[in-house]
Image 1 (cartoon, one colour):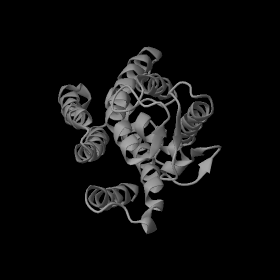
Image 2 (cartoon, rainbow, N blue to C red):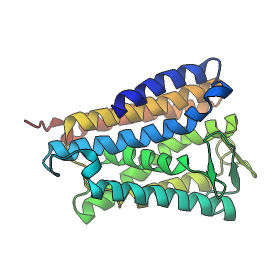
Image 3 (tube, rainbow, N blue to C red):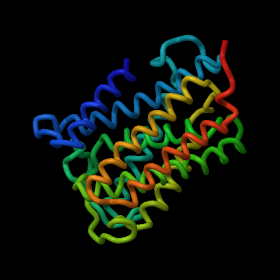
Length: 255
């Protein structure tokens, strides 16, 4: 259900943002998009674990470990955003508009879901993580996919006023410290996720999810004249495809 809802929201939202813009009456949909993205990612992780026998056959709502991990990612994301907004560290000096809805201590509550979505989706592309060595390798890969996404997302968000930087610079007005922090935080938060199973269908959907999300912001970057981010979006889509093609996990079929 959540997957169908997400894609319907994606298609309508992408069409509006790339053409006439999102009407004021539908402004609430911006934050909901991040919530649906996060729930989609959680469901993909759950489905893969279930089909691999890594959990019982109960419904997703009865998987406490996965929801505890999601809660940690939400709190961790909100926590680092709160520190960033109030201390200007580690991302740089910035502030949020009302684009993503209700704020909690100057941070939109939906930003916590954004961290779940980005870290979870990146982890799905990155590997298993069933051992500590595996988790560390997955963490580095997750940080890479997260920073790649942010190199596309943040310049567009800055240009469109989703949030603003008090001292623009770096890459299209976004400080380099922001991108470095995304890598570190993405890698760190991924350590709290459970093992990502080798289940072909979930991994394929995760790849499509990442590719189409980065494509949307790549097209928005092209529309805003942010050529560098547009090129990075195309490269990111190709890298995700290449990673999928060479990932031995995709060859595993569950009977």
